[in-house]
Image (cartoon, rainbow, N blue to C red; front, side, top):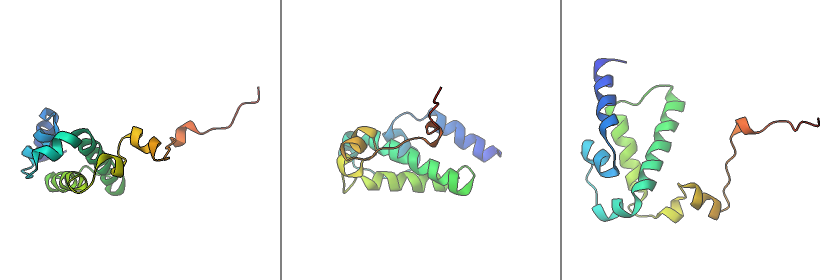
Length: 110
């Protein structure tokens, strides 16, 4: 990890709220959207970051972090938590179930 990446990671470690992240990356946001959807925005952001890491096998750079957060926030500007189904409670209500591959195994017939 280079110095710029280390500094970025140190900065990110200090951020706590959706507003902190949006402010850090200089993303204009509507407070009422964030107030209602803050957990959903952060979860979607986390999901986008994990997808990026899996596809690129690397940590995002500053601009990629910013772009992914902008995308996560935008998902909730014209939509809502129930429609987006980010959190498990909404996924279950929508009939979506996720099972970790590691939890699937053969049944022991002892």
